[in-house]
Length: 275
Image 1: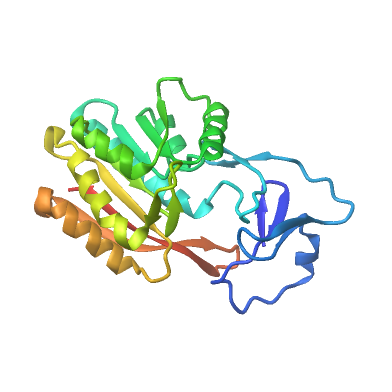
Image 2 (image 1 turned 90 degrees about the vertical axis):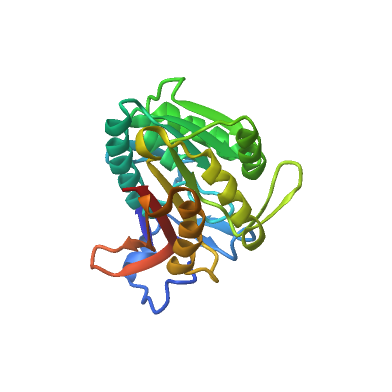
């Protein structure tokens, strides 16, 4: 059970084991029934459900709506990453004396894009889903971002990065949030275990070495066969080929924390910053 603004939702999660439902669960406004992608939202009898609504995370605003894939367009555990990236971006911007150029891959509805663009940086937002990019544009409007702050790219992430590498483009920070499996608009398959390594190699080549080094790289992971340590080692191996020990890499789990202190693991992350 989660509360999104004034709306309470119940969604299944494979890591939410051993939870005893209380009477509070009966107050949910909508419940997702069935498997991811094959289920549907059931609205409580007599309840009027808005088609979409807005939630706030500090100074950020994000549109929420019920998708057929059981998500809502916002992943609140990413707030930890947003805060971390903002701190590193502020530190790097002070070092180089300008606003940063950030590349957000598999950017979806743009939580990281909003966090960094609202801080004043320039973000290239890449996703192969037209509905996701459209949703991201709505979020940009909610956050009153200037038209020049975000470059919207409806494209396959690996194809875009390879082209930017040929053009010798550079970015001060890169965010990746790849799925375990997926397809580009042209039907090209994405398989994490096969394709992530080459993509990271290309991303490393896009990182600027301006005034001492790039700001950060953030790599999110959700595949169950990965661990925080495996993700950290992969990122460290690739980044240190170019930057050596100047890049400090850490990793960990992303958590949702209940008011009573319980934690729900929602994914893993590896983060590299220039020390």
